[in-house]
Length: 114
Image (cartoon, one colour):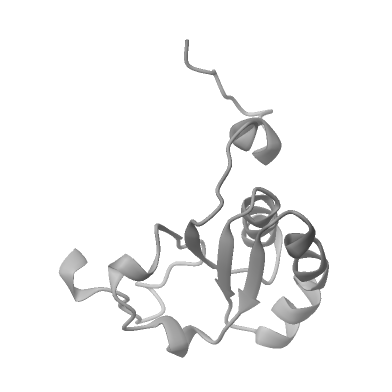
């Protein structure tokens, strides 16, 4: 039977029992809020997370604990500039979680998506 999730579900509820070892995930907007929580949860479940944000200094501070905790859980976290991921090919990541609206910012990650 499938689990039911709702407004009070947490990221831990969603990922309970899921091992993301070997999965690479791009998460944008890791300078605050949902982006940080998404990156933290994925890394805690052994994913290799690449994070990016418009304000890298703010993101550096917001994700400091993620970097420390990720290795202990078998995951990893790397913060990179958005320009470094623009042009990556889709097979580079298993999933992309684009929190901050790249299209509105004038960026296009994969031309094949259009």
